[in-house]
Structures are given as structure tokens and as C-alpha cells.
Image (cartoon, rainbow, N blue to C red; front, side, top):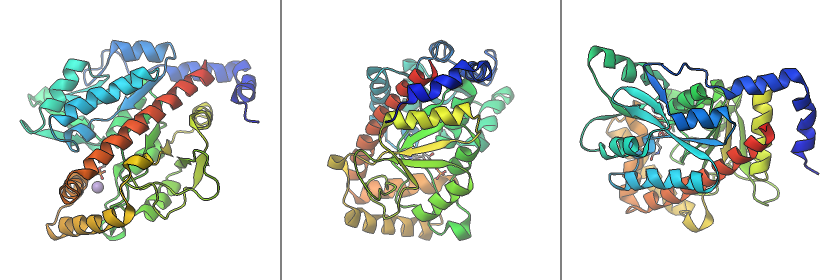
Length: 349
Ligand code: PSU
Ligand code: MN
């Protein structure tokens, strides 16, 4: 029988391990850092081992249009609170990185989309988006999964829920377009809950690359026996077997706890298949994806513009169905991620 409490009791007794978990609970950044503000609520929650769930903002700045992005941002925060954790929405406002945007700040960021330039911020962009404030330039930015992981980790947050992970793009073996989300998972100890990765990517190569990066990848099995697919965002099946499975949030939390206690410096990916009722049939979406990818190629779209471009094409070709599915899957992931954070806090108590 699976009994994490018993299994971990020994570890907690040992003074060294206990000190490690106490140490890891603290944010690793000074409170007066001029480039990063961690909200009082998040500081307090981390300090007292209350569960916290990080949320990204590229999904609001480069995914959902205004004003539905404003509504989604507050909805996802509510899902975290209703399920017993503290939401930490992460993004860049006026050249300052925020972990735990206040409701007003979140509305300012999401409602600036379409009215002014809002950047897409990955790891490489963080110092530009914040540092250039010293030279009088002010930027707003949505942080990608990679960018959000960096900041979450600096604040001491271990669980992060989102929509879909970036990956190796189709043809990536030639173009080298491999999302920085994958290398970030290789170097930053944060557990990400997503619906697998978007099916316009090359899923087998994405899984290979995550293995190379030392990232543990597991799909929630939810009672399914035998082979479980790594999910493909809008579809539950991808035709690619998930490297590992976990039964539920409690098992996921046990894995996260071990990862942190062992001080492994890499991240974990937990894939949550889109709810059945919201899934888009694979045969239907596959054709649409093929046209969207082809169009991006013909128009010479590359780099950071590639993912948002393909997503908006898919939205157009599905008459908005893809956005409804995106909404359903991200809500489901945030609920799952919150339960993982709650279980993890119990293990760390
Ligand atoms: N969801 C959206 N639009 C996006 C993304 C998610 O609706 O643009 C983002 C995520 O933040 C993810 C990023 O981290 O796309 C990956 O971008 P790239 O492939 O450029 O690494
Ligand atoms: Mn890319």
C-alpha cells in the first residue's frame, strides 16, 4: 500500500534533511531586489509552508484575446483559492518582475494587450525587460513557462500549473527551434502541470529532449491501465506513450517531494489530459494543424513568433473551438496543480 507519510517519517527525523527542507522554503532572493517584487502574501505563504501555485502570463498576453484574458486570469486565481492554495501569477509590469501580481496589477497587465506592446518573456529576456528600466525604458511582459519557472523558483515556489508546454517544433532537427521551456525544466526544480504539449509540435522529439535534459515526465493515469499516451493538448491521445504515469495528485506530490529532498536541480512535468468533454477529435485537429504549420512556414514565421502565430491560425481555422478547449484544459490543470501543491505541503509539514 502506498503510504507516503510513513515512508517520509524517517527523513523528517534526520536533522540534516529537515534543515534542507526549511532552507528550501525560503525565497532565495532579497526582499529589496529592484528587479523582482514578491508579494507579501506569497512571502508569508512560502515562509509558513502554505501551498502556493505559480501561474504564467504569456497565455494572457499572447494566447487569449482581450477581454477574455482578463476574465481567465481572475478565474484561474479563484480555482487555486477554492482548492486551498495561494495563486502566484507571475509577469512583468513597468519593467519589474512580479511574483504574485495583485488583482489591480493583473488587470493592468492583461488589459494592456492590444493597446500597447507587451513582450513575451522567456529566460533570455528577463534582464532586458527589467534592467532597461534603469535606462528609462518601461516594458510590460507575459512570462512563458520558462520565464515563469525562473521567477517562481527564485520565490521558493515548487508547483506551477499552465496550459501547454513548448517543445521541439516540427522540423526542429533542422531549424533548431526547441522551446526554452524544455531546457528550463532541465535546470530549474519546479513541477509543471500541463496538458502535455501542443500537437503542432514534434511530440516524440520533445519527449526525447526532455529525457536528455533529465526531466521526469509522467501523465496522470486516472484509473487507466496499460499504456497511457502523453497527451497532445487539445486531444487526450498523441500516439506517443508517456514515459511514466502517476495515479493521482498524491503520487505526483510524493515525486515532487523526493525531487526536492534529493536536491535534484531539475524540474518535473506532470501531464494532465484535457477533460474528455472538451477534447477536439484528433482527426479533425490534425488537418488544421498541418495547414497552420504550413502557413507559418510559407510566411517565414520563426523564433518567438512561431507559437503565437500557429495558435492564432488554429483558432481561426477551428472557429474558436481551440480557444474553448484551451480554456477547459487550463482550468483543469490549475485544479490538479493546486491539489498537488496541497498534498506536497502535507508531506513537508
Ligand atoms: N499558451 C498560449 N499562447 C502561448 C503560450 C501558451 O495560448 O504563446 C506560450 C507558453 O507560455 C509557452 C510558450 O511557454 O508559448 C512557448 O513558446 P516558445 O515555443 O516560443 O518557446
Ligand atoms: Mn522557439
